[in-house]
Length: 290
Ligand SMILES: C[S@@+](CC[C@H](N)C(=O)[O-])C[C@H]1O[C@@H](n2cnc3c(N)ncnc32)[C@H](O)[C@@H]1O
Image (tube, rainbow, N blue to C red; front, side, top):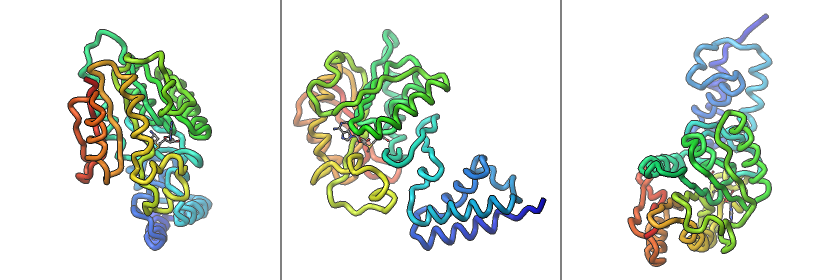
């Protein structure tokens, strides 16, 4: 059977994506090829020749990426920690930035005394990203995750089932509002760790088409200053955390100090620390319940 070279098609795809304004054309062109071949991106060179039909399929996929459909909607997956999540229309695509909060959360759990299973709450769970990554890394943890959007919650349920099939400890998912004063009252004062990547973009911010047209509005925007949901979520966090328990909240890079000030004003938190991302931009704030 005739086989054709893959590399020229990838080079052409890089150019197509660059012209379309895609931010990482080389990586995306290679990820899409690797996805079609069912191999890791780093192993593409091991498949220099492919069937002509695969090139046709590849070009069609690249064309869709050039229309600024998110890469993860085309491959159907996004990674966090050691796990892959199913993602697609109707759910926020987990971002690499959140890995920092995840790593911080694991370090917090590691530092806890091993006298009880740690209780963890993920507010605004979306696809289940933080909750499921924590459950995978810490099978001893009792993880609870809350999501208000029914479509996002369907993705979270699907991911939770996929993780159970992989042998992870099940998490408990709730269809609820993180600002509701009746949320999870049975865990009042019992929680060791609260993590949250809530909607935090200020209304009116300019966004790439991948985000503006494909991430749900409810997942993105947090009112005029981006802090609407966070502001109303702080009483929930305060109520749930045990004394000495800690929380981390991801935020827009324009409002790190505002969030730190909100927690300080609240009066129930100590050790309030702003954490930057790898680019040096403020990314999440951590605090301890005093
Ligand atoms: C930025 S996304 C983050 C999703 C996930 N934590 C992650 O890191 O990929 C925010 C999520 O919060 C959900 N959400 C927004 N307002 C909420 C509320 N009041 N209560 C519960 N979930 C909410 C959105 O539907 C969305 O799934």
